Image: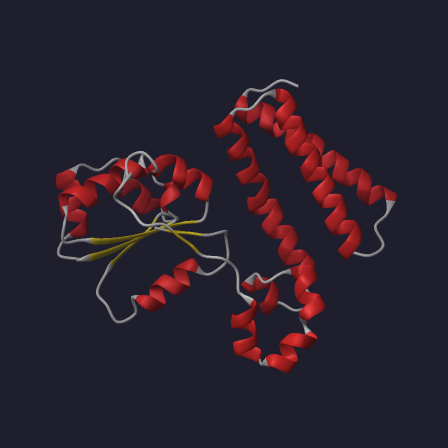
Length: 228
């Protein structure tokens, strides 16, 4: 099982590893795959897997009861090597921890490392980019889109970061005071990052950040049934 943040390249990496091998690719972003994999039984899985000895299931967290499905494949199809990836560690871990206890190896894939960057562009060029990389990080999309780093990071935060925070809060179900602490930390984090690295922050921008946090409170209340 390969877990990673969004957009760090897990699908590309696994497909490159399997490039010269025959395998079944199940992409759970595909609605037809999700329909086929709706709580399949052993007979259904036998038809789906066929003669394939390798099954690569991508974005597995999007499948309902995926933990039980993976357990069934592991227990009933001993010849099958199952490779599973997911971009939401919180969601997929919550679904698979109990069913797959003792049946899985977990690997965490992180953004590009400094050694990888230096190997790719050389020592001198990587040293020139040191300050830039400390500010904007090592996400592949950030590196591949020079000049658009702020937009890429904002998109990642808006699309994935807040969703995962909401999932974590709903799963853990802490007290209202704990939720308030978490959200206050989000606001502080955003203020620090934007204030330090995106020059020229204005009072109106700070106000918009405060509004965004209020919207997060509203979303948590709607999703988790919490009151503040």
